[in-house]
Length: 150
Image (cartoon, rainbow, N blue to C red; front, side, top):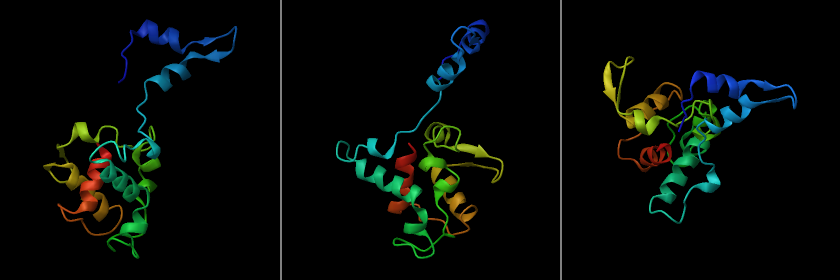
């Protein structure tokens, strides 16, 4: 959650302390940035959908291995991984992350001129960015990618 500070407070927090030569802005910035959970924090056994979330992470991190030209699940993409664009499997701050996906979809997108779901958006990436084919709406792969983006 981002804290909203009065301008005077923000200015004071970002000012460099000349005595110690440390910048307060770094602390303010680090505490207000969304950071996705790393793979070792996926609740693999403690939640019913833990294995599904982990599978989604694997698909995002290693898309070419599972869905690439020689994919072990399907052969539907150009060999790139989702994390080529969505850094650290969509968990890196300012790395085209998935931080707001679940809360902003469905939403209207100018490109299609329609309200789109997360599933439609993921398939747009497969068709455009990965120069491939869309996943079936009820496929385990698409459901897993959705589970990981929540």
